[in-house]
Image (cartoon, rainbow, N blue to C red; front, side, top):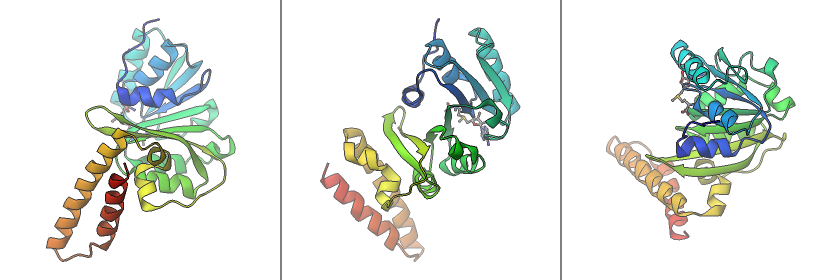
Length: 227
Ligand SMILES: C[S@@+](CC[C@H](N)C(=O)[O-])C[C@H]1O[C@@H](n2cnc3c(N)ncnc32)[C@H](O)[C@@H]1O
């Protein structure tokens, strides 16, 4: 079966999906992810959900054009509401802010009891998402950086009930990404450094306290020096 061509970002997320699983793609929009995963035979089926009517209609049209109506159902719903009754093994939430993703996961306690795999791709605030996951006992079992028009983070987590110590830098970049220490990590660290430096300079002008930004900048400089 022909599969749609996925962006590097979505392909990296798809990599974390387990063979043979039933998947929920939350905030599916075009439904390319579940269509790709079904067409390549990696998953046995999926629910593609979205909170907005437009994306739901788009998903339905695309799913029909790939003749996957029997394998992928479409649901208009907010976050993971009503998705528990479909018993997904793996949940994808890509292309939303880290705080929204945290809110969606926080409203689905059943992902803890069932140890559902969460594959998350925050557009912003990856640090807030990691902090939330760790506080709630979801362990990060895999993560990676991927470059498209810019650098994105993919985080894969499952509930273990355990929390660990995280430094600010580890929350921003991810412990596994830091251990790997790739060229992409360096490029991403330089980007985050420039955003932080701009924020520090803006705060300095208004006379605000910049000790937090200064501390992070020193830590990022250390990271860059060691990579
Ligand atoms: C930027 S698109 C991402 C589409 C696709 N997941 C991707 O990464 O390419 C974000 C999608 O999330 C949907 N969305 C936003 N908030 C949501 C929520 N609370 N529950 C479900 N879907 C949501 C939007 O309607 C939109 O279709």
